[in-house]
Amino acid sequence: MDSAPDTQHHQVIVIGGGQAGLAVGHLLKDRGLDLVILDAERQTGDQWRRRWDTLRLFTPAHHDGLPDRPFPAERGSFPSRNDVAAYLAGYGDHFELPITRDTRVTRVERDGSGFLLTTTRGRYSSDFVVIATGACALPSVPEFAAGLDAQISQIHSSFYVSPGKLPAGKVLVVGYGTSGAEIAEELAISGRETGCR
Image 1 (spheres, rainbow, N blue to C red):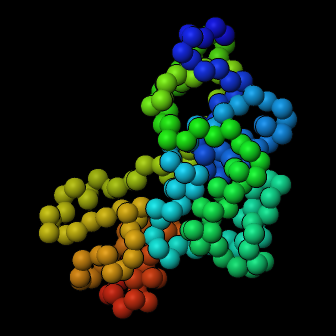
Image 2: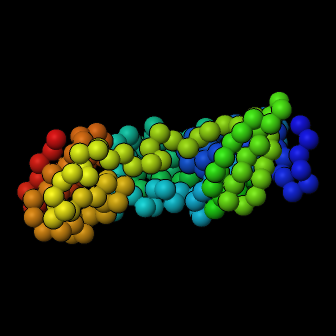
């Protein structure tokens, strides 16, 4: 595939510098492929640093490592958000992964037998693209939320920090997946009247 002079070409481009992107990047680099990992974050692990203060993984540390590097915590312990962020940053550094940070991919299109990517920092071309952005990159808010009384304060779990950062009053947690359950438990333990749906 021929690229314009201002377009960087790599055999493989991995979109996303979280757990999946780093693991794939390590395995591809280990096989001698020319690649770059494009990460929208300023620092590896920032997506974890933004989560709520008391977040802990629900899987024990001995199950949390990525390929060829165990998670550096006591077996059976449950790592915090900062532990995970530090581990991911260390993983990228340890394997000297080619990560280009602060680079958001805005478009991926076919270009002959390969791909052309438009990013916030220029154009890239590649023979292969791995999309490793995760399933929860955008907050999902039910449509009915827009019809609720404006006096009802609403936030998505991705913006939750701690019980003290919420307005006074009762709290309803909508959604009882892992995040919803952990946030509801923390709110109840803190003394907030909490319901779940």
